[in-house]
Image (cartoon, rainbow, N blue to C red; front, side, top):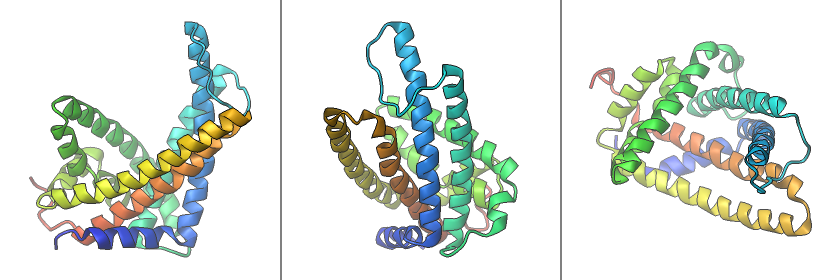
Length: 243
């Protein structure tokens, strides 16, 4: 069945606007705020070492090694949370997150999702450098990689291959869906920019990491919920293992 963009957007919103969606979003806010704080501290240290006066807002200071450890732990925790969120959204669980979603195969899924994300970003960066269009094509083709890793337990190579096959024939629709989500993210980015400027002028720069988390988290969760809905719509055919 061809991808129905409107249905995927509506279903994604329905999955997010639930008890599980709220739990996952709040968890993402906490982790992302911690990540952003550690990242800002580490970057400030780098700027200071380079003699650049471009201090980023942080609510408190940390030793640079501690900030680096916070960033690493938060990235790992965000990957884990993404696995749980994908499983929850694909399953359509609205009231509670089943216990097995937290534990089943996570030692395999988290590193594959993390490495798969890095590989995808690398390929897309090369694609965007080659006249932009190849990057968009790869982005659309590999959009379902996280679903195959988190839900079906594939390694990232198999997940990339199966995502490529599943997207075949629906890439324009997937692109349209992505553009809508990007537009929503862009609007959220404008809100963050306005709040950031206002907080800076008011002398409340320390709240910027939290504001960033409050803006990024719901957009990220909505993106996962929408892609999960699209994944469920398309449903990989029996021969999706082969190209």
